[in-house]
Image (cartoon, rainbow, N blue to C red; front, side):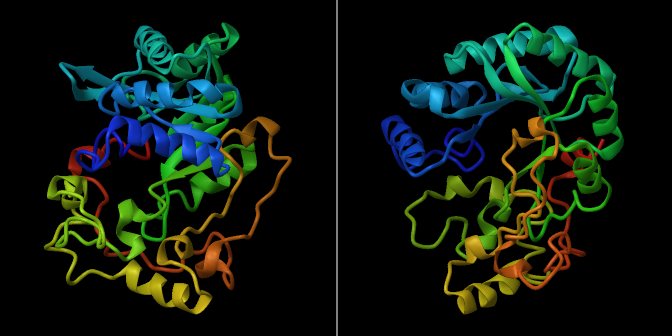
Length: 308
């Protein structure tokens, strides 16, 4: 996503970004996530071009669910005909015959989730999609969707300072054998200890100020909150230092490290407590940092789209 939106223009060329993606595969990364709304559309094109020579060796996930008009988001939409149009567009831009994992990016409260699951199930039967996923959905919605067609994975924000999935959602995933794909596990860069809203860009980089645009928006990352709020960065850095690792890896707490398509195995692989430095001496689902008071992660409109 960051190669096409949210953090401003990349400091490299398109060829540089393709080299980064292919280099990731050389280093063992096989799961790549994109969405029609990233850009919009251009991120899928980038991912498709980069991974075309090695398509058989990687898993590609993409997402539908936003209403895109004149190149901008205009709310959510998951009408069955819109899902089909989105999938056809994604297949074309990715240059592939099948999407390995298709997420509904945000729940559309005007369309029954049963209709969404049924439509994706039809696309799976047609060979256009392999697995069905949800994003930022609540436990009740997950259950309703799963009753119509098996949900393989839930993608939701999860990190030391975003613990929203804990409780009903994680318990539901474990019960139903659904994988968790955590996004922003480093808190949009803040948990690395190299960036703050006041700095704008990570220390040690030449990124232009515009690259920090998303980091400067939202209640949690506003400069007015930052000086007085509880610091998950302060909590993670001492542990990282004692372990002799960087702050970023030390803050990635993975209560369920199964890859996002492991839900297809219906829970044959259990929880793994390789929960990074922070979680070694705690229950893997118990936060090391109390996030209360950290502020909402999105503005009011964005928060209305999560947990439905």
